[in-house]
Image 1 (cartoon, rainbow, N blue to C red):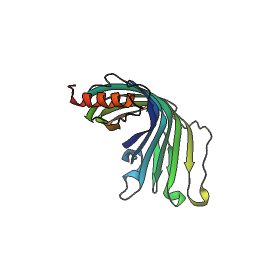
Image 2: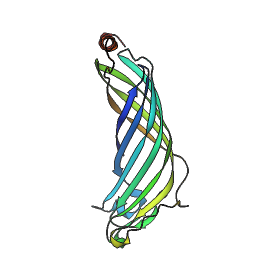
Image 3: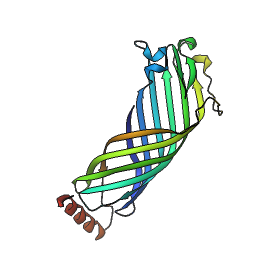
Image 4: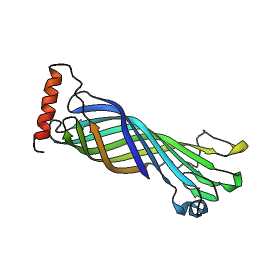
Amino acid sequence: MVPFGVDAAGYRFTPRFYAGVYFTYGVGSLPSGVGQSCASPGAGCSLRDLRLGVDVQVHVLPMKRLDPWIGLGAGYEWLDASWNDGFVSWPWFGALHGSDHGGDVGAELRGWEFADLQAGFDYRLAAQWAVGPVLMLSLAEFDTYSQYLPSTQYAPSSSRSSSVDKSLHAWLLLGVRGRLLPCLFGEPGGQRCRADRAAAVSSSP
């Protein structure tokens, strides 16, 4: 799965502390081992994952060029799969036939993300721009399962189901993140902020 994420909205209360809202969207395909649908040439077999939550971050060296940071978040997760031919059986989604229903079949799982552990560092490219690696470990549990059938056989179910594997699952994400670091202070605080950022760029890690 290939994820894309963004800190949708947030605020840096002090140079060290940040709080905000995160959003992650991942796209991929179901593994071929789940059934003939994903193994058949030309068969559609997609997987999508969406995570939305709030997080806090602590920056260790906010006024240095190299700034390590750690974070913790929590939120909600939606995992959606769809296929258009053959038989699919996966512990999370149960067993469904795509072609038997005459079109795309979908299944959705959703539940709480209990913890999103984050770590990384920001490397300043300019006074207000930074980039660096980020590592995230997400721990969540699905509690609701829905099935989607095409045409007039559309039959979603939002009730809790015993077929849902309610054990904890985890996502491990490794990537690169860019960050905009504006100085949102009035004068003379803004002037000091810009001076500190410029000094950070010219300083050693």
